[in-house]
Length: 420
Image 1 (cartoon, rainbow, N blue to C red):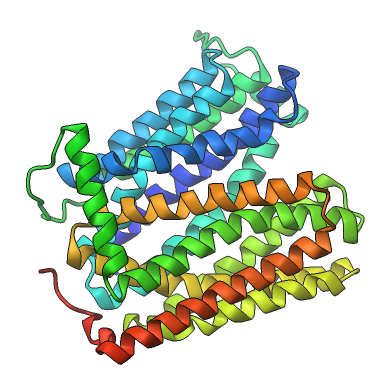
Image 2 (cartoon, one colour):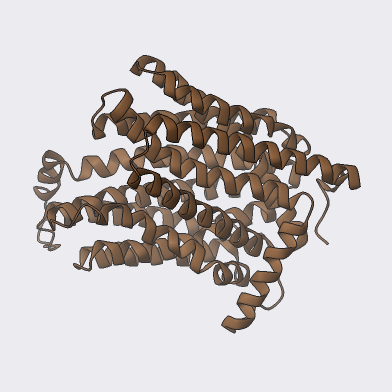
């Protein structure tokens, strides 16, 4: 990997670290405002909605400028959202602005990989990016929890600059100040990202034409024999992963007798497994072998169902690490393959925008289905079995679809193809 790649990794790490710390700070703000409990999950909804609603526009924006500059501008939007929260704007609206910045940041972050690196290095690059992102999620959550802790906030408020009054008087303001500094560190790395020299045709600015252009990219990727398989897998993974976070919390409460704060640790354990699997995939799976990992998706769905048999925390830990490792190992090569086909067929920014649209629509759909099952008061073990069967079944159907594609012509020969 060249130096530019490590600069991208550093920028992504600090930006994601701040995103996740800000989520905890926003939850703490809602608590101090005595907001109703149903507002807390809406934070994630408001954040994710931008990925779906803005998908037709952010891809064109990402391809209109050098990717490093796009990442810098969108990181400034995140800082603006953080500043709005500092200024007293409602946390839901302020975090929605951060989600807007994140939605525009993502096509540039992943798209630059296809510009900077040859196809054979994409799996390794995605493995490191995903592993680092998971690490930033864990550390960001810990950082956010520490910043809203009464002792830490008291120490921050007790720190004064000589002859300078920053107007920071509350625990929330102290936490938001530290998070803003983290965003600024990410912005500094954004400025150091090299210009890859990739330039795309003039991007449309008319909203109607942008939507039509996005629809064309959407159709192109789903019709491509490799694109449809990798897109189906990543779409399933992100929807299933988001739902599994909530299932784990409910399972920890009902089957293991763990309170919310203890159950949240299990989410971290699952994330560690994803990081391990992603790193292993980066080391052992070349791009040309990306589709050979699909059976692990079926295995993941089957193993998830064994959660219903677990009654001990000490069994739960290794089981969740295993599930996470399987998820990380099979999604990273598929993600790299999808980026490669998108880059070949259209452009980096547009293909990532299509990917984000599908994946986050899957997140919203599966979370709503899970909420419906909770409202119907279905037993958590029954929900886990349904979830496992759905994941394993959908992965099996996707594998059969790939086999059918291969019988028509050798689509695997397209892997490594240069941009048209």
